Length: 274
Image 1 (cartoon, rainbow, N blue to C red):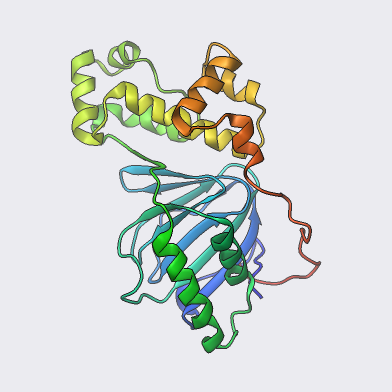
Image 2 (image 1 turned 135 degrees about the vertical axis):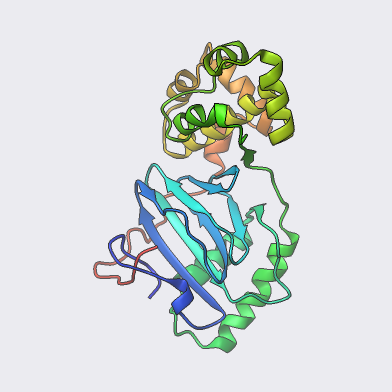
């Protein structure tokens, strides 16, 4: 079966068949930097994942999925309980060649769930019928920007590592400049050259992605606002609505039912690890 336990090894490249799907409930998890010979689709029915891709960080909240082409080096981080789904595809010419973050509608969600939980020895003819429907929905899914490019300047290295570990917030520009021993203008030029964004826009995008992550982990709005140094709950709500088009509460209510009615899986549901 496809439900995996966190203490079992798993290597999708050792499996046969056009599609290999897995599902799991994972807590604090760090996959380490790795790559697959198959294309991969990452999705969380609930919870939030962060994917490191070279000089980019990609946030994956519920209702969004990431398509990673075969051979893409990546690292997946989870800081709370995540209803993890991952599909691995034998590469074909009909599938995307570039990394994408896509919106997942109700039909695509059900397709992912079925493929993640079907037996690995499911007849290939049945797999291909579902695969054709999946590829049609994948091609039509809106692409979204849930990625944050990271600067590579060595003067920012320690500061960036603190941000990744959740040990700090992005400083205001003048404080960051003082910390790294550079002028405001120099910091601005670094970010524009290496991320394509001014520092203030980059900082706001970081705060938005971190807010999405904290909300997905079940943190109350007041605690998220405080953790991200907003002056008040209302200031955070206004910021969130400006960038997403909806309030944090509406966002939370739109994620669908969790846990599903058939959760947890029956005792002894076997399988290896992510």
